[in-house]
Amino acid sequence: MTDIGSHALVIGGSLTAAAAAAHLACIALGPPAYRLMGAGERMARAVEAGKARPTLVTAAIAAVLLVWALYAFSGAGVMGPLPLTGWALPAISLVFLARALAFPLLRPVFPENSATFWWVSSGICLLIGLLYAVGAVAAWVAP
Image (cartoon, rainbow, N blue to C red; front, side, top):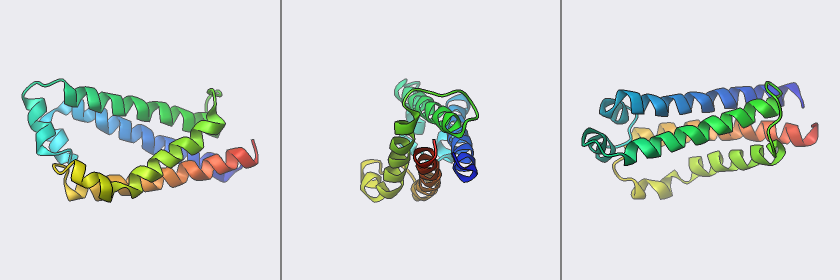
């Protein structure tokens, strides 16, 4: 793999791990963190009411992000190989890019999320998706 591909995956994986940590911080810090991150008043109130769903959803997102970060690090050669890394990297890239570009369609489904949440999270997803794409192409061209 080229240096640029490895660097892109390390940066993308690091940002993905940071996003996972931010989700875990929401769980640890509670309703104020959900509000700060723009998850919406409904989510924050559900956490205040002791409902399990926001925590489970947030934990699931964090877990997926952590696995994706591991795939980025595996693709970059920072850690040992994971199964199907060559296929996982472009798939992960496509999910991040789709999430970034689909926010106008998603926004009405989650009206409680702030405009700041949608713009910031979509921009982050676009950046991470592009980084994974660069790494995926480098992995396919020069494995």
